[in-house]
Every structure is written in C-alpha cells, then in structure tokens.
Image (tube, rainbow, N blue to C red):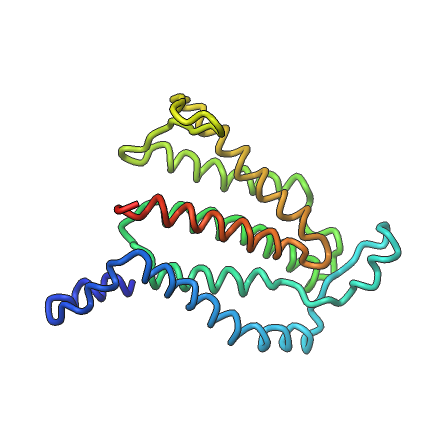
Length: 222
C-alpha cells in the first residue's frame, strides 16, 4: 500500500523513489512486524490471562504435560496480524506471488485458530479432528498450487539439490507435489511446536534463510 502511495508522491518529490528499493522495503517490513509484536504482545498475554484463555491439556497424555495447563495460547493471531500488516504495507501488490503466500498463511492460520479456539475457549482439549484439519490443509494447499500453476508465465520446472543444470519440467505433477510439500511443512511445524511453543527457534532460522533466498531471487542486480 505504501509503495503505491510512494509511486504517486514521486511525481511531486523524487526522493520517494527510495521506496522502490527491495532492500529498504524488506528492512521496513521486518521492523514493522517487530514493532507490532513488541507493542501488542504484552497486552495480548495479559488479556488472555485475564480471560483465562490458556492451553487445554488432554488427560490421556503424559502426566508431565498437565503442568502446561493454562499456558497462554493463540499467539499465532499476533504473528498473523504482524505478518499481514507489514506485508500489506510494504509488499508490491502487483506481484501475484505475494497474494498466494498470504492466502496459504491465512488459510493455515484460520485452521489453527479454530483448533485453538475449541481448545482454549470451548475447553475441548481435542480441538478439531485430525481428519478435518487435514482436509482443510489439503484444500488450502490445492487452491494455492492450482493458482500458482495457472499464473501467466509460471514455469513448472523444478530444481534439485547438487544438480546445477538439471531442471526437469514436471507439468501438472507440480500441483500434487506442491500440495504434499505445503501440508507436510504445516504439520511438521505443528509437531515441532508441541505444548511449549518449541517451533519458534526453528521457524526463526528457516524464515531467515527463506527470506534471504527471496531477497536474492527478487533482487534484479543479484
């Protein structure tokens, strides 16, 4: 959004052209998300504690897990809000890949929200069923894969590790492969997270690497 505003203001002052640089917008996007998290995080934790919205633990699990009952949960809402806000403010709206990524992020986030809502608010420790969760994830992933495949000029070739000049064109097989990857990564994060939010460390590392790759791919000079 701010990029479009800067484009308009550039006709009055050339200095607004600095917002065209990917590096600057990337840094500002990270700082915006960080600022939102730092400002809203403490308030959100206090609100969850005041309303007694916390982790609900199943009785058929290990006894050591029972001590986790009541731990503030639904922190993903804050993460999604920070990511969505910073992306809409600083990303290039004309890039269709931005909307595909936001669709997958918000789609999987909505599934997680419903699951946490049933656990934390409705006090149902089982949340949504595994079948319902898997159907939702596959639906989101399939929509995103088909969307990508039919984008104008999209290249359905893949790159393989250690094979620098081998990029096979897999055609429509790209769709089921993309679905497997999206659903697989989503569940891998869920399994890593557990009761203690253990996924945040690996997520920060992988997000940093993926962010670096995205920057390199999107930089015209590099």
